[in-house]
Image (cartoon, rainbow, N blue to C red; front, top):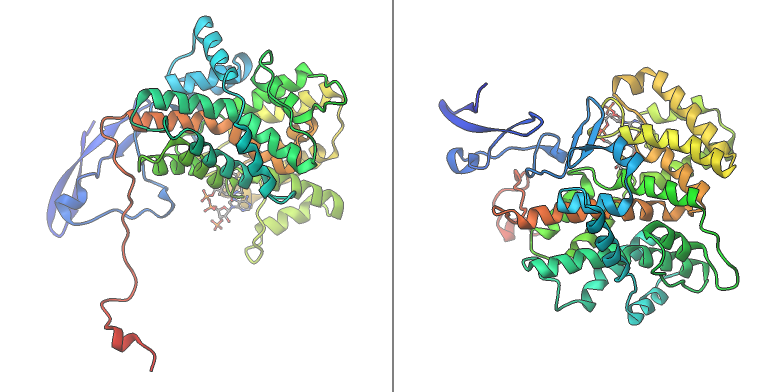
Length: 428
Ligand code: ACO
């Protein structure tokens, strides 16, 4: 098989190296293209651009495959804990029992946040979106750790990763408690990662809170399914910001903002709001599908379509199954689940969706489970961020530790005005 590509421009031929990944994916290496030819490549939205090589996550959009460090998502969803998956993504291998015990202990010992940082919550309006609060609080963590956030120092890298993973659930639950006007609940060291989060979210000093193992299990599954997805919008943001050697807190804070958008992680909130609107309006599902197809209408079917998955999203498959199981185990009957299933069925039969290969994505059913677990709608994207955090960290660490790391700096083709004298440009 060829290991170079030939490019012909202006009557000259150039040989470009071909890079092959471990799953036989192929790329043309254009890193010397401008130097050799004076040309750059143009790829709006990066549909065909590989920004890096990576050994963290493999996905095949045509076959609906997703693997973290080579292990199929289906197996991790069934057998692993979220902190185990975080370790796998970050360190590249599954931890031994002892390694996992030490890792869990380390994460447990860093869950508290500085009391002064808590005062920042008082500056936000009660109904401020928790993603904005998360981004601010996570970025602000850096002000407390100025002596240990140098991305080029391995010890600083390690402690920053641990602090972020450990404190994220605390910060998220405090944001929720503040929005309710309830006292914040401190982390408890005897609880595992998911149980501790649920306790901080839902317990109140006046009443004992029962941590339902079914809810813990479902949360663990959801976090695992969201843990990484190679070079998506928020992960690429984390890499780009991190490539300037900004500290990890700043890079993750930027990633949270990227995830918030409705075309990305914000879709899980949009899906639930869409389902609630359909229920309230009583409109038949067929009408909603028509609206989504109408090019004069900006409305899109939230939770449908994916840049990479053009067959099915394997995470959506697992979540749909889990949705039925979780709701029946918890004894919840949610009419939104019926609407979602009806909507999916109608869209999958419609030629518009079939031709464009639009299938339910990870966000289509996740909101229904979050709702059954008692998570408020505006916290859905925060849950996604909590799940994605190990992926962001793993991708950042891989980039920082790579010997050929470069600052991310795309080029452009300029299409504006050519050289214009100030006096000619000034309005008379
Ligand atoms: N509803 C209706 N039409 C859609 C939808 C949708 N959900 N998604 C894509 N289309 C249509 C587009 O209008 C376009 O039609 P055209 O070819 O006639 O112009 C075609 O399908 C291709 O869409 P693009 O936006 O070009 O596809 P892209 O790969 O850039 O976008 C995206 C993928 C952003 C996810 C898109 O499908 C979308 O907006 N979906 C809804 C939001 C969503 O669920 N986001 C979550 C994604 S998963 C995640 O981030 C975790």
